[in-house]
Length: 274
Ligand code: PAF
Image 1 (cartoon, rainbow, N blue to C red):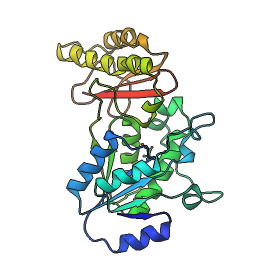
Image 2 (cartoon, rainbow, N blue to C red):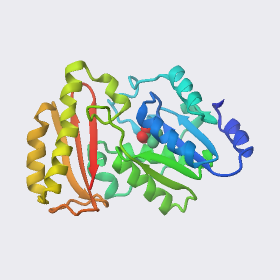
Image 3 (spheres, rainbow, N blue to C red):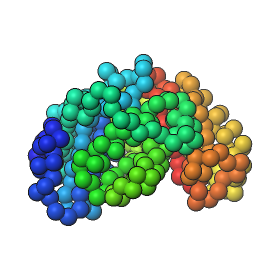
Image 4 (spheres, protein in one colour):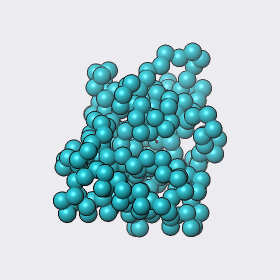
């Protein structure tokens, strides 16, 4: 595995590649969720590039940029074992210059739910993903469905900017008790880990309600808010269509149920695609 840290090194390394390039951008602290993306990309492409970059522009003032878990040594080993061809590990100075041209999240889809709670987050996320997709030369880029809105906005960006890359959505990976994997789960203390299960439990119960024919958004939301009482603070429970527009009735095949809640230190998100 080749580890590169500059744009020039990556561009030189990329010139040696022909055929499809699978790419997974990450912020490191790799877990089984990342690994499932890496494995899928490995199977489906001739070459595999992973990036590790904790992108400062997508963190808001007061968020956990400084404290964000960094595990470079372990991450390098994981990538080696997963047969990554090129690992790109730039610094902020490599990725950004002063007074940059910026792209922004769309005014509606980019400013509901996560975009409303974290205004500016998606601008920074799209900015770095655009850069990483361009410099990696990815033909196929893999993103988890856990960050449902992120996935939707990246897909929209590649469409709106006529970018020649396939965005591949990947299933949420959970631990054996149902907790959706996230790098921020390391912040959870023992009892919080237990309480954090209320997110996936609420979503599971929502599935059961839908499967038994209950499609009322009001009733499902009420059940979920009761189920989520183990969280310290629920930021939102949302039942939307794939365009992130609020629904009154669940539309089978076109609905996402999302939740964001604080449990101890981390803010957790989870969702279910129906
Ligand atoms: O999902 C993430 O880890 C980040 O938002 C991403 C896509 C790597 C961009 O920094």
